Image (cartoon, rainbow, N blue to C red):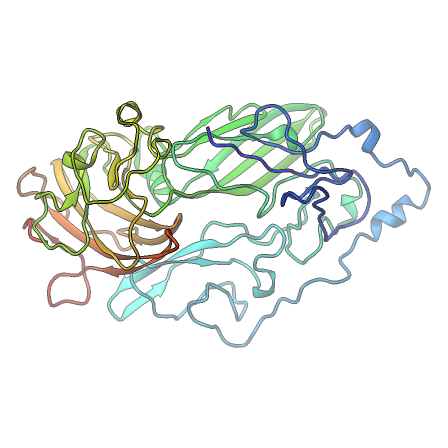
Length: 471
């Protein structure tokens, strides 16, 4: 089980704060009044215990109202708005609420972006979202910036919600009883590992009800509108209790929201990002017809142009736990794959093969496919392909590429869906050659990748779809 250890803060006094202390020098921010402490289950998001009866403000003088009314930010950050938009930096430089508008980009590329004033990026609670390059050929542009956390109103939650450089700078925040986690407070999780979050570390009062919800990445957002019943790639346990267990299967950012109704009816809310990061190269496939079709993901090995389905590519036949594929890469510890659908077979082997297919979807509602290579070498290139094996009707597959735990490319997402992907067959079904991925590795750690989306021969636009099995 993946251990999630982080200290959160309970602020029970007057005055905004812009500093945080690490009294025990362990690299984790401590709560006011003492160092962070781990209590109970080491896999729970943890922090210091707070006794509201002893930590609540004791000053009841008549000038309290004047003190609380003066909770303003005296040194706010500069918004840094400019006259001209700077291309491809993921920032709304001219402050017109659009990010990198009018900028050319490479179709399917994904970049981090910020939905706020430039000077507030990475300040306080603010976290980058993602935007995808849409269009084709010479007519590409960055799509909307989605996800992340943008500046909002101060919420009296021990965080700088408006990202101006000051925490809880609002007269209503004289007494703060909520301690939401902020950027950097939460460790990364891993696919197929439980990520446990203890809500009592956010709020120490008497609670009437808890309600947690989670928003996943591109495949989960596609499944949210195309599956019936609605199905997600992750599972939640304890969504109506104080203890949430998130079990993800895919890498990427998960937006977690909790709504706490205290006894007496007061409502408290927290929204934060949990980052799930698998190592190396990870390629995932999903479609709008997951329950009606069997669409397979393939990843072709580096420095090889042999035909598909000949052993040069990793797919369900040779790359699952029962497969025999060998590209010469070292095996990974069994913990990297033992929690997946084929976990018992991997456990029997005692290791995780590289590459490997850890999810195979066969007419499974809301289930993606996923291929992993934990330890590629620097500069190696791999090709992703999608094959329509079985089913009926037009499907619109989407492929997402993660390198070093971060989404780097997304292909086939609306409005740029793949057309004419409608011929199923195990022997001559449609093949979509998606993208060539060149990985970037430093000191054995995958840090990024260069992506080259594929087009039909002698063309610079369009999706390369046919039923010929050549590379």
